[in-house]
Image 1 (tube, rainbow, N blue to C red):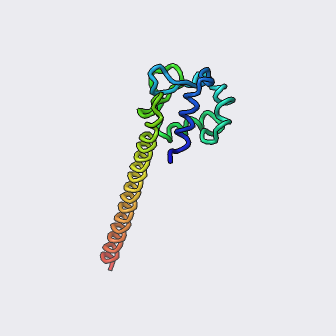
Image 2 (cartoon, helix red, strand yellow):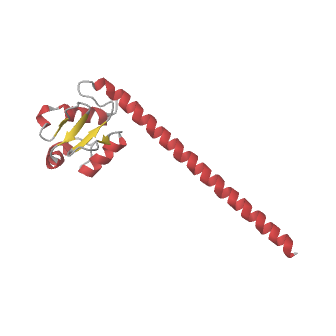
Image 3 (spheres, helix red, strand yellow):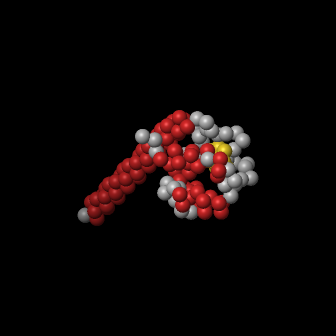
Length: 138
């Protein structure tokens, strides 16, 4: 089943009645937030997926794989699979974002294991040094 965040953001951006607040960009593969106050007042309260504040909404966008479009004067966000008229691509978007999160978690686990292994080695080395010092004192 497709994550409701993807479906909800697609519906919001695709809703022509919300165009003064949030709409598709001219490229049709990103969206622009035109009116932050309108977003806060009209859009965010209607969807629990977005959070109640703009910063939470931005955090959610990042979490779900959207990126801020550089060089835009407006608040513009996009994803390669977030395309106007192609909601079927949302499945790919969800899969790609999910795989990225899995890879990030795996990298964190590897780093944690490496750190624990280094700490264990340091402790063993310290014990060996202490043992050798004890033998020197005898």
